[in-house]
Length: 86
Image (cartoon, rainbow, N blue to C red):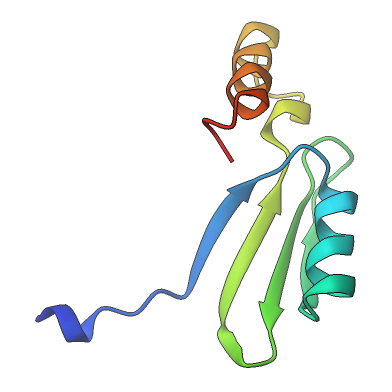
């Protein structure tokens, strides 16, 4: 495999609020929402650009995930608040 054979089909993006991020990607950037899955607090939403429909960005709020221990959620929030994780 060479460097030109590499294709990216998706990536996960940590966000503070899935609904707020979804509104930005959908309403401002014109992305399409797909694959809205997961229970409250562990929700993930896929968005795709009409110009690149094979590339999906997964929006998720890890600090709201109830499966993550409270200390870890706080660490995530602190890093995101400092712009070090986003």
